[in-house]
Image 1: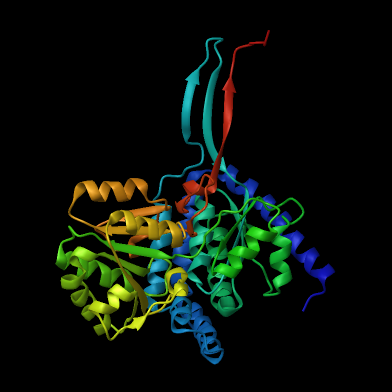
Image 2: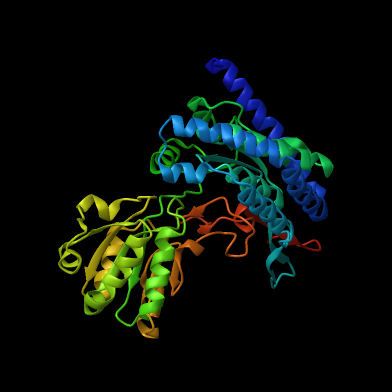
Length: 423
């Protein structure tokens, strides 16, 4: 393990090289960045065997550490998943390059023309845990927006992330761009995270944490640079009394059980009392058949006496597992009050045929993503047409919801005159 002094030198050197690479990336132009993204996807496919072998090492170590099934699911790469990552890089390459977009332009009475123009942030640090695909998603989105990326993955995915990063850097070189535009922190030492949060001697402009509650809390507590925050996905799905029964059954089952380990998975089911007696047993039967454990409040257990009782802790738990808490509510106002109390601002959904109720929910619920009649598992930048995402931002900075290439830009004002002076 490096000493603090030698680690500081290493980390600050990463920052200096990233700063230099970010300038070159911005000057290279959109066609060069597009070429790099396509080359990165090609290299990912060429290196597939090596990446999957590295992931097998991580998976074996994860099982030895008794990681939960949800964490192992997040960690695992298959040939199909890796191909999906490569296609995601290609999708990012096909996005409009955001750098240079004129967001607004206007003329002043004195003849000045003022424009607000989108540009790169500079150097972005991404701190994440067990999902190695974040390495590719984050690297690609940073390149699309002409930012350099310093990536610090979790110890569980260290081998997988390193192998993916090699492929990305090869793609950058293939396109004639500096490999230092994407760098992995070469240690799992937690002290490296602290150094990133201090800004690497002024060379790191913003940090994006993607992981569990403790990681995000540490970043938000210790960061001395701006943070694009991603809190846990304490996601609710609310079945209104006007919901189509078949739709409600299908959507709830998918929202919970398609992949339980992702942040868009539903964790709490709310259902109107007027339809709970008839509809809840049908929803419960499908969930139970898929291996889901239900925990309910008293009203729910009156209808489903064999399920577990929900505790106060359940309403604020992101299970990331085959468990869902269930509450019977009197009406939409009680449902929204529950969400306001326990929600994390990530994704909330309503199943309803009543347009008025649906619009009330969509307008009044405070979350980065609100949905009607759709599975919460669509809470994903790729599904939003962004190609990929770094995470779902739940804060109140300029980036909220899926963080794609546009959200990794800032803007500047460009003023054009013909000799004006201010009186």
